[in-house]
Length: 431
Ligand SMILES: *Cc1c(COP(=O)(O)O)cnc(C)c1O
Image 1: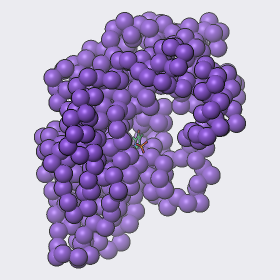
Image 2 (image 1 turned 135 degrees about the vertical axis):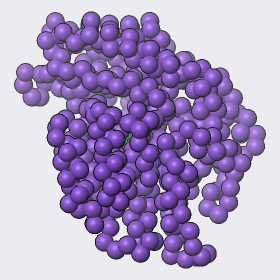
Image 3 (image 1 turned 90 degrees about the vertical axis):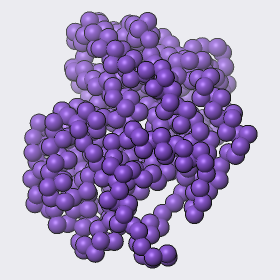
């Protein structure tokens, strides 16, 4: 731990989801990054940490990728940012054209923003206004799942299921119809029944496809997500698919919707879109949704929503280069091969430990659920701190240790992660 920098940090920076009074303690073991090389983050003392959570799930190909660095430098010589409100920017057009070729949405139109939460917020507002614009009254509710996480702004928080201490905001949440979480085998049957029952008041259903990430990597089967989409279609309810975490290769296909054979009305993308370089996200609307907003100039059909940094040119430039690089480097093949390898390593080294309950994995999204005998041991936190002390950066969700390596992770690095994870669990929980 780089004590001087941790103290300076603590004195002026307010970290999200972090109790600042204990931030600088040895158990929190914060790393103050100075620079990075490939898959490793480096602090001011030269200590190296394998970024095994991809900088909170955003990084895809490691840090300081020469091609991505260059894309930003080149764009900087043109323009860093210009507004999307009533105007365009060439590199944003190019990015939208390239994304249109690959997103699982029919006739896609892109409304850019800067964070996943904003992409969800935009989707909620678009779904609501879609019905209003079509003259359909009373479609103002949303159905979401237990365990869902869609971001931290008030609307995204409302469709999310809570947890992580966010219950304090309950009075601010608008009510939603809530199906059970993916951990309940009945959740999709229950959701289908709720949709049938409430179709006349539902604006949209919101779902994370295949994996509820923040819930602790809780899995669904592709057929279940497919059936959910079919139910939405049958009852003419819009489907919002939140691929902020699963998008851009995480689960072995560019989008998880592909495995589910689902084409949503609204798709939320973010996190990996720029390879982890710059804040960018987008709400992707199908042609049908988009068309409902066409009308006379200054009419009430217009979508009155926009963010200052929507369609930032530097972010668009790196996102465009990143999309092509995923292809050039055949990154998805690496995800599938390394995911299989990681499953084998975890089975061999980690699954049998008495402290480990369950291991859930889809592509390079993994949750190792610890099973502490009593509450309050904070095993998740302490195991991750022990891993950080051994040079592998991990961060838990409660007692679920998340392993989310960059998509370009190598076999030796996976060995390093599992070896360190095993040692960390042994140290904290006993062998
Ligand atoms: C991270 C995440 C979000 C929120 O994205 P931010 O960029 O952190 O606002 C939304 N949905 C899912 C599924 C996520 O994993």
